[in-house]
Each structure stands twice: as C-alpha cells, then as structure tokens.
Length: 138
Image 1: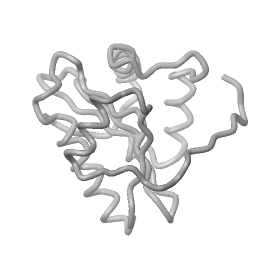
Image 2: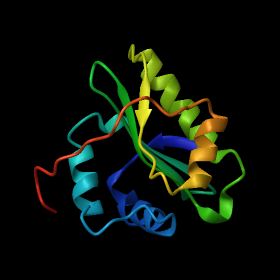
Image 3: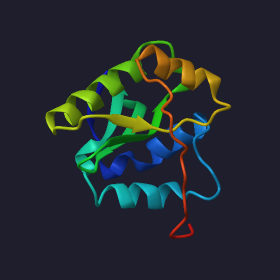
C-alpha cells in the first residue's frame, strides 16, 4: 500500500470509504470535516492506495501535548490485510518525529471489532472519560 497525504481529488473516494466503514454520522458533515482538517496539519491527513484506488484513510494531529487519530478507515473488502496497521505505523512514525509523547483515539464502546484491532496495536483504555461540546452545528 502506498501512503500519501490527502489531495482534493480524493474527497469523494474518502467519503465513500468512510460511508462503507460506517464512520459517518448525521451531525458530522464529512465535507466540512475535510475542509477543516485541510486548515490544520493537512500533511497528517493520510490516504492509502493500492492500484491507485483509495483503500484506507486517517486524520491525525498533534496539539503539542497529545496526538489524535480520527476517521481511520480500511475498505471492508481489504480488512484483515494489515492495512490499518500500516497506516497507524506511519501515523505513529510521523507523530514521534514531531515529538508527540502519546497518541489518543476514541472508539465507540459498542465497536468491539475496532477495539480488538487497537488492542493488538498496543492501545489500551485510559482511565478517562471523553467529554464533548459541539461549538459549530453542521
């Protein structure tokens, strides 16, 4: 898999991938999420390609204290091929090079398959509660 930064012509394919992976929610406009990400560390919005087709994506970031990953997606037809691991390895490599000491991510508690994937990569639940507050309605 070739991993590279997202480019504008990738938008429709990335959103279709997110849809196929069940990542879209009515309260998050994926087009707006992409536009927002492109204003902050766009080099950490990665896509994975096989035969010039987007098969994986992830948005990462580093705020100076912690790194974050959102929208990690792998084409359901290509899961179990270590593509998610490759993408996470690249994110970890880039964040480590930036001096990021810890990477955080959020997974819905009902998504046991994804929780198992992250546990295999060494991610464990933190003793923290995730809180959120919507500042801009999509």
